[in-house]
Amino acid sequence: MAQEPMARYRPEEFKPGPVGESDEDLARAAGQIASTIFHPVGTARMGADVAAIVDPRLRLRGFQGIRVIDASIMPTITSGNTNSPTIMIAEKGARMILEEMRRI
Ligand SMILES: Cc1cc2nc3c(=O)[nH]c(=O)nc-3n(C[C@H](O)[C@H](O)[C@H](O)COP(=O)(O)OP(=O)(O)OC[C@H]3O[C@@H](n4cnc5c(N)ncnc54)[C@H](O)[C@@H]3O)c2cc1C
Image 1 (cartoon, rainbow, N blue to C red):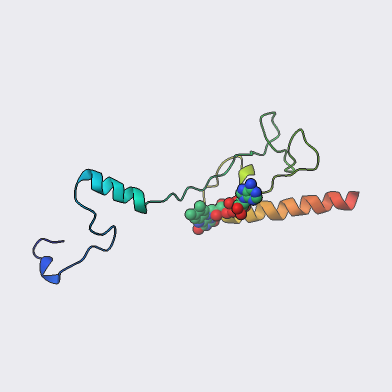
Image 2: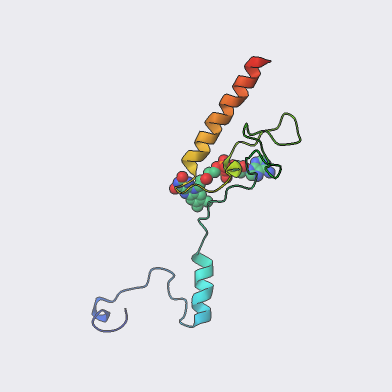
């Protein structure tokens, strides 16, 4: 941007700003401004197999009275964003708890 023909507009770098020009300078600047937007899911996978952490009713296998009701039970990540499916999991999980409370 410092070259002609842009120089006459006196553009100023906004981000990351004047950090230097070496590869090391730029790598350091990237590390300071970058952040992850990973959508981690599936650390307590739901399933009917022996390796699943929770069963299809979200109960922690091998324990009584503990459920996992969040994005961690997704067997695989959704193709779209994860917030709405997480709300759906919460709604279904709440309904499962109420159903079982009514039976007691
Ligand atoms: C940067 C970013 C952007 C995103 N943007 C979108 C988007 O635009 N649209 C979309 O659909 N999804 C988006 N997501 C994903 C969405 O936010 C998650 O999928 C969703 O919040 C998962 O809900 P959760 O309840 O499973 O986990 P979380 O929302 O992470 O809730 C976990 C909760 O547990 C608490 N906690 C953790 N450890 C403990 C502990 N030991 N004791 C007590 N509490 C604890 C945490 O503080 C947190 O409140 C985004 C995620 C990130 C990181």
